[in-house]
Length: 426
Image (cartoon, rainbow, N blue to C red; front, side, top):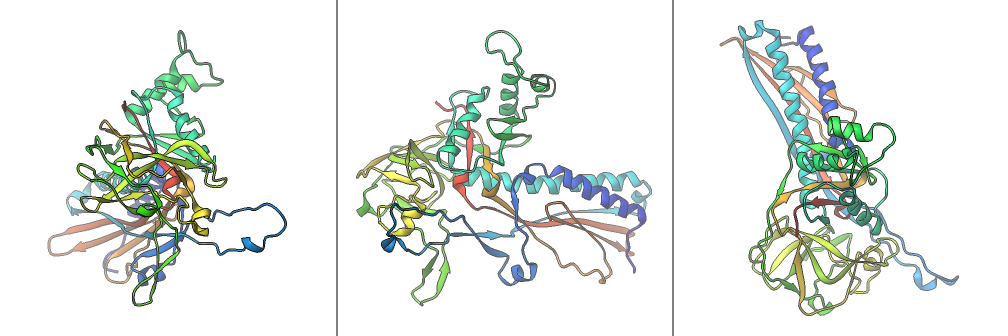
């Protein structure tokens, strides 16, 4: 073959793959769904992934009136991230093998970062469990509030993760490191020593914590006085449905994570804003009992002067359908003008937290021909994410082109099993 990899290059690629796998720290804490690549090519890289059923139970022995259809909800997942790192080296530069090694090292770091950032962007923008904290990070209770919020709403109490910005993570580590005086901590083993020496936190309040060297920012809410009509007649509630029927009679799947609501005005409101609605309380998703606390919501987009898309949808059972009773997530005391309270009053960094099954990575695959004059090497990480390395020599100028590619998708299947912890709020 005109182009082929040397033994040294193959060894270097194996090192890149190994390092790439090690760098995928955050993305290792989400679920992975492997797809049939032929099918994905035929469906424009979109597949609908099912959400969990929530069953109902009834008292007594006579169930005659209780045999109802279950509504299976699903969400669209797309393999939509195509990331590549290309570089070029000439015949003189290749005399120094370390140069090639350093470029490969840089490429794998960037691609691993791209995957982690994509996952964090989805978690940060679509997580709907919002925990606003007064002041900066620095106390166990900060994380414990996120734990309590998940528990109250029936989120599984295992495989939970929390990614903190460096400053917020170090603030929590400082609390653990306290060894004497007021607020002293006493831990078995090296918990305090690790916090003091390495600024390491580890497991806190049921969350495996991670330090981010990058973090998304949330701007201060600029929306003014905004109200919403929560009476049944206003129609600002959601009836879960698996499919919808077009005027032509065709069936299509429905994404039940989002809902368009009508409010008094959307002036100053932007995607990412967090809010609660007066007298709209969260319920435990299985027992349907009120938690006694306001349900938190996120703005996904603004449609016009009086409409915006929010998540999660308001499933209040005001329509009385079986699907609403199954997936009810709030209890509403109807008001003609319920006040919306903004939670992100001050600009701050976003610290996302999630349960493993909420977020999902979908590995993709390139069908690169290996007999087209370009050398090709493939490798797959423990998660099934594929790296493709290609090499091409141009005899005209004695340049060698390299590229390292990966293809993947990220989806937040259940926004009510993920959220954000924000500090510095009043």
